[in-house]
Image (cartoon, rainbow, N blue to C red; front, side, top):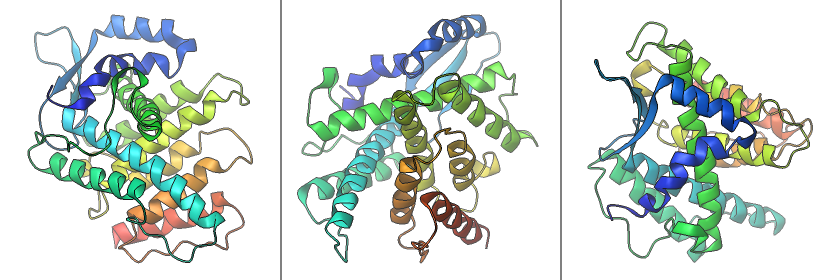
Length: 297
């Protein structure tokens, strides 16, 4: 098998339906009406996209395996890192070490491998001793949770690509590409979060997947001023306007997780988190502003 991520191929195909099962019928009609299919390819770089070849009736959502590997590795790290960071906070630890225990070290090493693989050949063999996705809910508890986060994240990304087709965006770069990417983001987010009661527990899980997807993209943009050759909004902007769609009043878990993870992502950029903010919402807002100043200076 090319990669253990292939264990999840069926679940990946089903993810856009499973993340919002109350809209399965509507989604199935959209996919049928627009002849949308998913294609897995072997290539480097984070370049998930939708294409349509002249003469072909199908819109093809292209999912590079290396992208899926990186997204899973990031989902695993996102879960492990935020859990261990929370423990450190509860213990009033003055320092936080990414190699402080085997759980953190393995997750961090896997993410580093996935990033190198993504940015080089995209074909390297998954490290034998590192955490990996398993079929049928097998594997460690961390791997199971990572897979759940990953499937929510890839579902949002696939919905983003479906949105391009539904909104009839040209599948080439134009002067309006950034605006179209924003429209596709919000269409996907509103599809996943809209129309269900705010008290529904699944709402938080869905939002967590969206956040994981955009934070994953942000982790690849730390040293660039703009993403994807100026065709997409900056990731920090996408974090802001997508989390604003989360309709649960004073529950600030999502904002807290975003803040902690962004603090890690930009740990070498001398960005300090304003821990004296009135709320995690205000702390996250200040942090995103500081990131915007860093990336445009």
